[in-house]
Length: 277
Length: 309
Image (cartoon, rainbow over all chains, first blue to last red; front, side, top):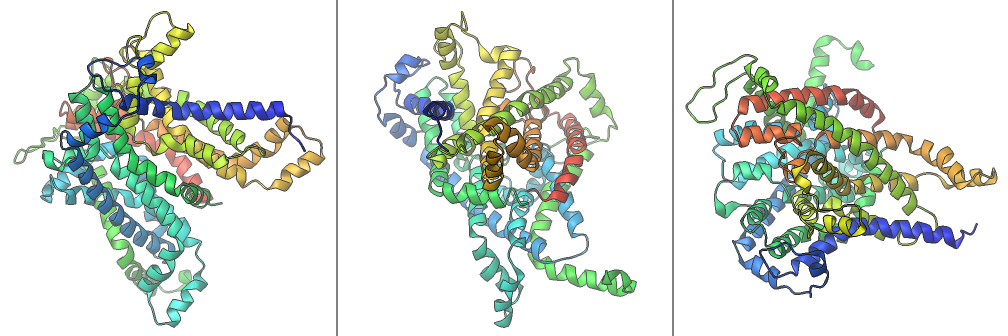
């Protein structure tokens, strides 16, 4: 069946228009980041006639400890991601492979907690962290990030783990290995796409987390990138070129990871994890 | 089956052994969730009945329902406005978000379209960017005066005769928040629907072709019915997302003008951390929790059975 060229044209026109709608704000942001005049809102015609340069990026990177905050965020996010992957996958493994009384009840209770907006928990979480003496430490943030992520991550991973055939475990059992070996040698390697997708989700969520970090981190030296960007914005409100140069630097890690892995990422992430029949 | 016939004691024993087997794997996760998710929620209920003091050494006296009363006795009706806005946000954004998701997914999935992956990537881009950065970007695009991009375009097209101060009026601020939310999240629905569309068996369409069905006929008779289970999943998530507006409001208007665009999470956060009304914030949190619970409980049991996730 051949499609008339008019229809094709119309469909592509819609697609390109839609894509522009989603991409244009990014383009406008990038163009603005080349804009070096400060203290006034750049008018659209000025934005479109700007010449690409990296002056703002260089200035921003060296200003207000920005590089240090970038490093802070990298450290905070990497450890939180590894910890979340380990704890969540262990918990999901326990729920997927073992049966114990009350399992589904606990699972349901946990899922219900996902529906409650997390903002209401910030104060009690802060008090717990304070009682543990972990205010103004990354350890405090790691504990909360990893623990609060367990429910959603376990939810995501459990489906994958349950789809792994039990027969595969026999090879480990014959070798005399136990449950830990099964987890490490069978379940983790076979769910790498799911773990990878989850890693990206956790990375993104932690990388941009603002409210909890603002509550728990007090000292300037430990600040994370989202806090730094908002403070930068408050301080240099009219310096749009620098604000968006800083924003783009903050966006880059997540966007690069996403584009690099997006073929695997979206497919495995939603086909199987999200739409499990 | 066999368990039910066993005597009580050995049933307890089996249960205990089963727990002991699973415990090494689930213990850390369970303790973490209990300490940092479940316990804070209980704590929150407690604080909602106290005049809470965060300073060490000070006690927090019980005040009964006072916090709840003062939430409703507020002369500015902040809570009721936030509640109204929350429902308005659901009513406006969910249908638009849903329609755009189905629409773009179907168009991308058209048989002759090349570079499907590229389009999907572009449409998904807003999802992977941070709320804070996109909020700064939207505030910049919707800047006051004729130099703001949106005002500039609307003035030049002739829709506006003078520039709008978007954040200074209730309706224009709400429209900005809605556009921000839809732009940021619609890619999620598109990706889910694309995956679902690719899962519809080809032969259904071939059979429809043989019966001489038109393109629209195929869409309504084959595509939509096949997408039904996914639609349930997508709608539930869209409703929950619209219910949970927080960065959308906090980073764009911070509740302004005069707390008119506030939603409950942003109001809770600002009451607690700007005004230190912890008791009232906790009371609002409890009520929001009950509301969300009521709205989603039915959905949750349904999802739990279907294993849609």
